[in-house]
Amino acid sequence: MIRVTFVCLGNFCRSPMAELILKKMVKERGIASSFEITSCGTFSYDEGTPIYDPAVRTLRAHGVEGDHTARKITREDVEKSDYLLVMDENNYRDVVEFAGEDGKGKVFLLLSFTPRGGVVADPWFTHDFEKAYSDIEEGCRCFLDFVLKKGVSA
Ligand code: 4NP
Image 1 (cartoon, protein in one colour):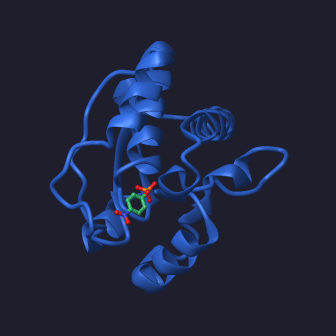
Image 2 (tube, helix red, strand yellow):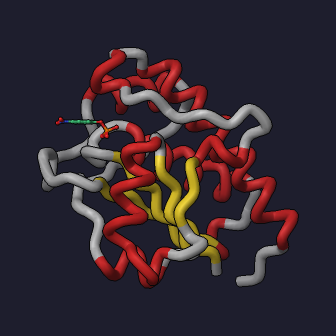
């Protein structure tokens, strides 16, 4: 079992997009039962709210369905996850600090799995949900290739 937790700031745009995109990818490949995929945020602005409408519309335009309720990262997320995949440098710093020893070797920038690297800019501020979608889709695809090369067992 591979346990993946995506983390952004609000758990309102990027990390729930990533959660639903990766869930769709593993389902399409017939390997969903080997994965536990969730998402959360480093801050609690949006706790309890559904995914932001423009993010939902962008996902739907790409054939990605599903929902999520925003929540803040917990100790259990850190302890249970094999991978804590973050969107930008601020998330990276916040998650590493929150996770402490338990997070050693688990925290990665999502786009670090792509050949080009970089960060997923926050569409809450850029308003560019298409760019966020294509960055996250590329990151998830490259991450999945990475874990499948390492081997997956149920
Ligand atoms: P996210 O974007 O980190 O991709 O979920 C944000 C959503 C909401 C806020 C900040 C970032 N906010 O300030 O409410």
